[in-house]
Image (cartoon, rainbow, N blue to C red):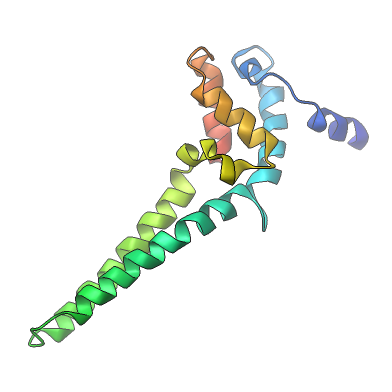
Length: 145
């Protein structure tokens, strides 16, 4: 049984099948494949995080530079609070993109290199002729990683 499940999981199926009557079986197969590609030290989520890290650090550095350029020190405590709020806002924006809005990054070839299922989902989502039901189900599976 375990061998059969392994074999089923290594066989690709047309993602448009997610719009068909056997979609529940197919979505489970897709989930297992996507989970393996999304998670881990070289997973897609990690790659997205690394790719966005330089810009996040630059945004934080910009906030620090603005803080250092202040001429009015009379409200220093308020300015420090604002800087901390800015750090939190920057970090939250990158975290939210990473966890809730990573679908746009699926089409980035440098991020999905060596990730065949993510590439297939990306192609499906970009295909104007693909069934919307299949796209919706693929999106849900991709987000639930």
